[in-house]
Image (tube, rainbow, N blue to C red; front, side, top):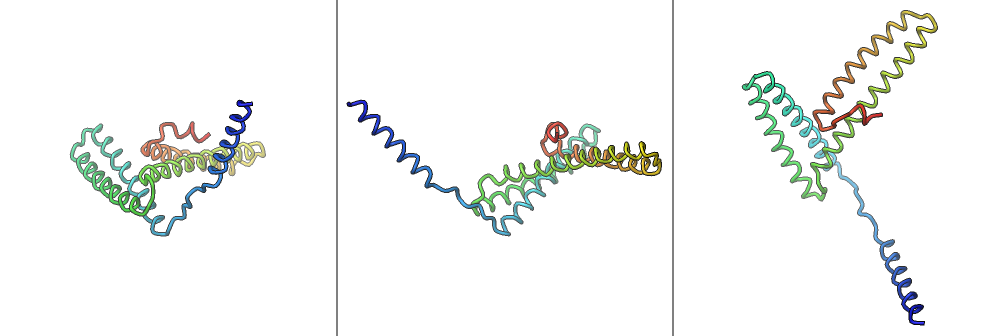
Amino acid sequence: MKTMKTLGVMIAAGLLASAAFAQTTAPATSKTPEEKAQMKDMRHDIRAYNKEKGEAKHAINKGNLAAAKTDLAAAKTDKQDIKADAKVLKSEGVDHPVKLADKQVKKVDEKAVKTDLKDIHADKVAERKAVKAGDIATAKADKKEIKADKKDLKREIREARRDGIKHPVRRAK
């Protein structure tokens, strides 16, 4: 009898707890145009910072220390811009704005790599169809497009790696 009573109390407590959790709502995340503009500015600053750091590393590896110093100075100003933007966004209620902007930059990089891979694949299919059909002029044009797309892909991969994605092609598949 006593176990039935405790079991009933436990079930009632579980139901009340689940009802309490079901009533809580997630906070609304409506962004104002100012927040969107500041996040965009922060994304540009993060890209510029990553680019300057990459150029500084490249200059150091080449042995050009003067260029490396100027690149590091530019990176330092970009970092200060990032910190200032983060402070403003935090005051407006955005949680972890730098981490959020960094994720958005990586997402854009992955999307660019994916689209380049799709373009290359589509051009290869078109080239094969043109060769099968015997249309040499179209096949040559498709070959040129493939070459241009591969060049774009290499540039996108370089940017993605600079922005912190270790294996952008493997992740894009």
